[in-house]
Image 1 (cartoon, rainbow, N blue to C red):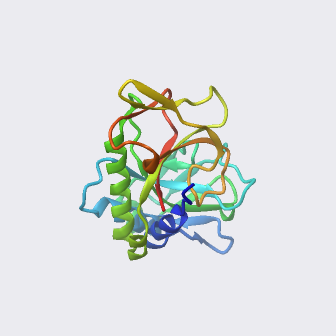
Image 2: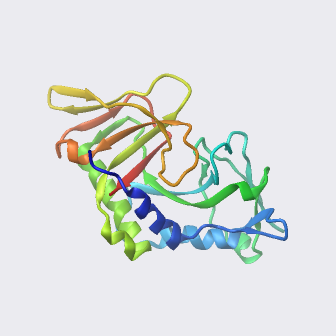
Image 3: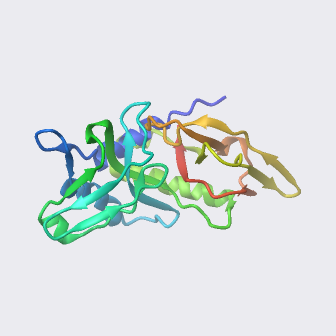
Amino acid sequence: MARFRHFTALIALLLAAGVVAAQGQDGGWASYRDAYRAMVVFEKYGKPKHLIQSHFQVMPREKGVTVDGLRLSLQGKSTQLNLPLDATGRTVFPLLKAAYDENAALVLNRQIGQYVLRPRVTVVVRPDGVYEAAELRAACAQALEFARYADASARSVSCAGVRFGFARKGAAPVVRVRNGESAQVLPVVEGAIFADDADDGFRTVLYKFGDAPARGQVLTQEAPLAIAAVFE
């Protein structure tokens, strides 16, 4: 079995886009300006990126810390916004000049030192649940190109697959690979969606390119929370 070392490539994104550090004497808030600088890297990226997306993520620093009930807000002199987090701790990040100029604060309703704040690039989820195999390969390639743009150390890795992430509770996820008349159900395992995320409270399905034909489709019965590109 191939050993998946996509953690290395994810670190490249982490270093280039930057973890947003806690600020203040007690580390009770994070700088919107720092977060803006990290997030705008993807916005200014000029190569194809229509199959991938970038969110701002709040993720646990250690296992046992949860994002359930976690709330993120932007607080400044002229800006007051709630930034809803999904089950993976991600939110759409607003690029606001006024908040940048006054360096508004990103505030959590919990001790911010328990969490890491950072950009997160993922594959776009299709509402119909039908993914062409070639499109998933192209999406992973776009994510890898961005990783290489962000940090040259990512040039040593290549695309190996994608990981579909689902909530632990609810109906069991079903992900099938269809090639012509045949179909195969991929195994479901519990774990983290992202290799550098301490939150392993998800059910995941790994679609490996090396084990699959270049053509065909991947079908999801329900929409995943996120799809992560896997590098090795």
